[in-house]
Length: 441
Length: 199
Image (cartoon, rainbow over all chains, first blue to last red; front, side, top):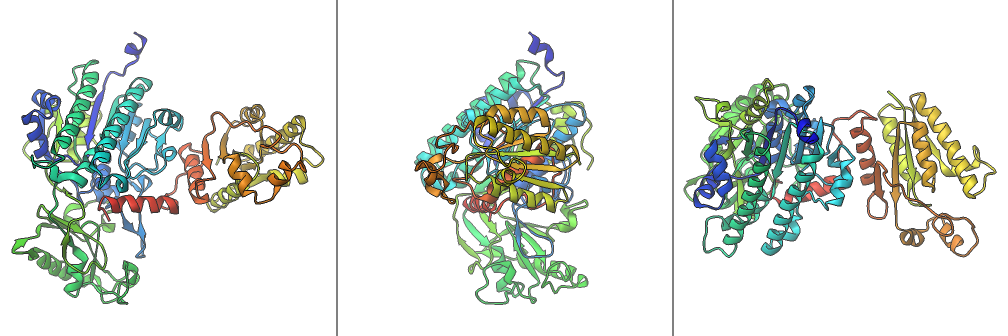
């Protein structure tokens, strides 16, 4: 009884399903694979969303947790370059330049519990509890407050699977995916009652891993792993259902949100963006045996970082950059024309091209790429250096998409009207559901 | 900035002094006043003449704790690197000092005997050194240390990154932008990103 009285008045609950496309949700909720999510959608709404660019988890989740575009939060990829160098860097949670929705709630003494949230490593204090997800390495740097480290260890909590072990072993992959799902739920169970929270949030990342390794099994009924693929989604659905039931038991359950951070599709080919630049004389290396950008030549006018971020090799910005500012626009035009016409066996490779200034706004925007390529589904763009061929066989079965992400919620009244939804709308809806003003952006 | 005490504890030769010196370097680079109270050095001066009975060991630790408390009270970071084998005295120091972060440098005794850089375990096992912690004197591991590092299977960089990260998370030192990952963490992250086709 005491616990009941202590519960905060306003509550919201969020389940993130990493890399689950809206089209898959529609199919699985209609075909009976995900009956619990079908029920939740029937009580509310399901919308397709687009996400911020590039369409990778670290960027998307940073956009979700801040409600801001990368030009404001400053995370443009899993990798970046140390300023003024060609040295690869790995942005961390501490490089995030904006407050998160959990900070916003904390300012109002509202507590958040956040479990397996990608792009939050190393963990830092929030008003509540945070357990970092991918790319977290060490458990004790993945948890705030530190007192929950013992709980994580007692639960044998694991952050992620070891891709090297499972990628060619479907049996091991599915076993580990189910184990990780159980681990998330056990931690959620523990923190549900341990913490007095206003926002409960958990992210399932096994969905993304499954898609990378076994997307072929999704809609090919003859595929030997098809049933296992569906069974994993049945387990995810049951998990979402149990979280919803628990949440709805203490209220009307409307402030329940399920979302993904990007879409997914089957990979047919990989495309080396830097090879395109090199073959067209736009990227050159000082020595024939150079293996990284640190070997780039002064003659290079552009280069790409993963997955498809194009940077003009500007004078003053890069040590050997030779492009003066007054030539940048001309080079961007040239790059746009080049990639617009890129084709493989008669099929276009690039669907859309954005200028950085079109999609990034804010104090960090100038650090971002000059051009972003969105491929036709099936062509997985890569920023590897010195890939000799433009189009090469795929290494993994699935790739991210910029569109076809989703949000499902019982709060149809909070959905912006008259335009298509983006991932950036979701955190604002969550804050509104808690009667907290949205992040300004 | 408020001072605090970073208290390393662990078996002989487990790596306490090495880690203490590396953390000292990082904190100095961040502009803090830092003093390392190394167990071996303290026994050469502050505690000269004390032996290795339980009573003398406790006296040694209380002296170290006293100095650490004075340093911390005056805004410095006091880093202690002594075996400090007894839990009750360590906990007494925690209560006395207040702003206290305990780092347990764990390493299996068999690994230490095998490693035995200073040759002390060999002498202790041969009976040439008496009251040697881990051989014929007890060591009581902490029950709730803020950080546990495993010097048998972690690199020094990895352990230091975790210690510094914990100090940041606990709010004892300010967070800094960039350079958040140790070399081994970066390698792990790089491998994972490659495995998922992100780089």
